[in-house]
Image (cartoon, rainbow, N blue to C red; front, side, top):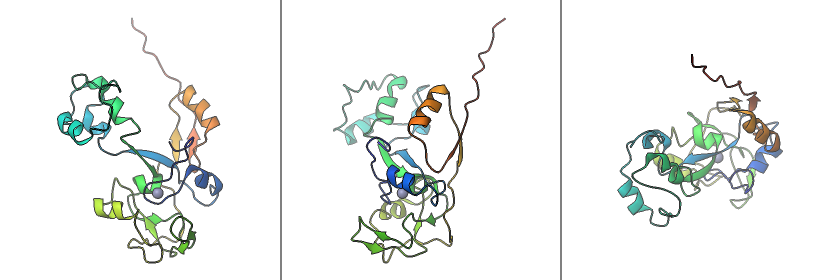
Length: 198
Ligand SMILES: [Zn+2]
């Protein structure tokens, strides 16, 4: 979604290609996806029933292919087929996803080609969905660049943690070579230790 399709951040419009082009100045800005309707943290993560009343979710989202996807309401190990589906993932940049306090909008002081070339002020801010209240998060998508409701006291782009990310395994390292995560420093995977039974 972020790298192959180059889909924009739902809130601020930055893309993977933008992150790549501006990697020197946009430290820590990377493309991510957010579990929008249901979060792993509340679903039991395959290990139990979790806290989601799935009948309600299924009723709210009739467009999702509940049968064909492999989802089975009686089998928690299949909840991922909804949770990690394109249907449930929203593309956001690291700032609009995880910034705990407003950080500089990626186009602060610049024209926004996707919003009539209006110019964002130097203190235009972005904040993450994990920390903003819902109206603030939502309205970042609808802000007028010339009079945005959200500002920051920062004067330079700061990295939204984690700036350093450890790769999970060799496969993740191989993928990172093909599709680098701009703005982050990737650390080598720690070799997995398999416990020996005696
Ligand atoms: Zn964003």
